[in-house]
Length: 239
Ligand SMILES: NC(=O)c1ccc[n+]([C@@H]2O[C@H](COP(=O)([O-])OP(=O)(O)OC[C@H]3O[C@@H](n4cnc5c(N)ncnc54)[C@H](OP(=O)(O)O)[C@@H]3O)[C@@H](O)[C@H]2O)c1
Image (tube, rainbow, N blue to C red; front, side):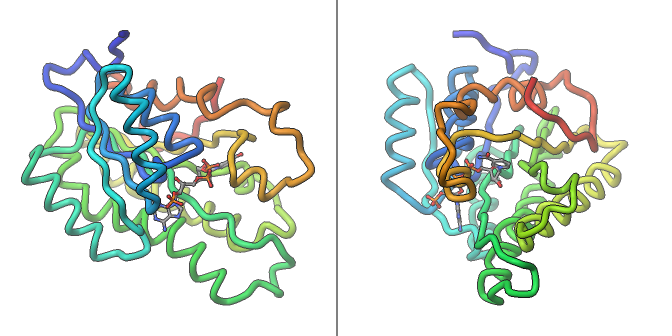
């Protein structure tokens, strides 16, 4: 087993949201293989257990947290539990996301708009708010959030999703700027097109075999998680 996190004297504790499938599951498995203890957050227990089985089979360790991130007070409770058990958080991966319905902006269903904003923006705000102290308790706290290429173009019909990812980018850049003189680094990852359930919903006619698998794009997550990675406020795409 390689160990990219070995630069730190202590074992790395990594929390990954949206770890029950797709990109989050692949990142969780990779981080566990690199020697981190991974805390897996998502709603679907069965998905989390399947990821845990794979992690254990390769000698890794995980803590499973079945949680709806739109229930914001539960994020406070989770942070308190992690503080009690580990006293720090080394790596925070804000990956969970919701596509919502693709439609003309002015036709967006209000409930759909609210849910997309709640998960893609507000839940990530609560993660930063609740885990800030624990990231600072690490010798090298690393936060990374998964954005999208839709922030870089006028993405017609991607309404709430595109707006939410632009807000996420602004928020993470603000957090990075405010922490420029601390040991905490915060960055964004635009994963590009990846064969997941979300991508299949957005592009139902596309052959997923033509896309990278989630496992193919985890190197950038490892790079940004390393204790010797000192950039902050950046936006990265997989190599
Ligand atoms: N795939 C792509 O091509 C692509 C491109 C650009 C950006 N992204 C971004 O990459 C990230 C991961 O997407 P993906 O493609 O891997 O999507 P996905 O396969 O749909 O996975 C989404 C993950 O988020 C979790 N999740 C959804 N709602 C949640 C909630 N309320 N509380 C907790 N967890 C929740 C899901 O778990 P549960 O259902 O078990 O809760 C699942 O683990 C997202 O932020 C997405 O916007 C993806």
